[in-house]
Length: 281
Image (tube, rainbow, N blue to C red):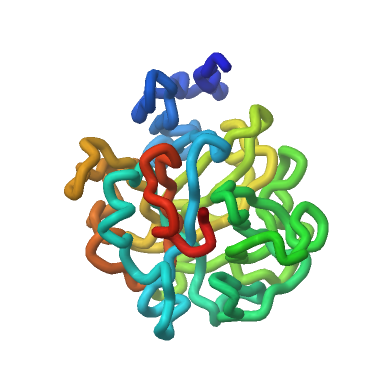
């Protein structure tokens, strides 16, 4: 199957957003990234985005020391050394549990009870990564090995949906500043997923901008400081080189040395050893 590059994105009064290929496997591009200033009214605001095909990679949820916390996890706060050579991408999870209504289920354990109507990251036993609303797009029928929820969706059917969920705590910054560095994950019409960071912005601005850059369904992920993080890895072997999507991010190797919060990692299935990750063959 031919790999088609994402279309450049042109917004009124702004430079065109052009995608750069970043990862390739056997001649197949696995990742494209772009960074630009989408708002004519606020030209200092930067949006950085990464597009990847979830059908080409094997995903796994990893459990941070603070979120979800606890002990006895198979996928702990860092990657097992046997999985490192196959690592391709890693990105942050969601909010602290005290700030969400939804839940967190993985490795056969309920760290927090799931709630229908909440935006959800879902990982199947074969490592396929999906996102959607639990109870409609995603059914908790026992076929998912990991389900991580984070607030209601912020984009549905290609438009901002935050006004459908009044009273939702979308997160604020230190000292209750509402304009901050935010991350999101969304689906595109071409079936690929897109990770986005944008800041410093309110949730309304993020939700209104995502459809303009190709988002059909979107959920907010973690926010503030250095918690939003998307890294792609090159070089292979035991010591891959991590590349940050956005200069506001830091510590590209924290998934290798230990993370306080949960994160999602994606691997090359052809080189990932069998049985290294929870529930994946």
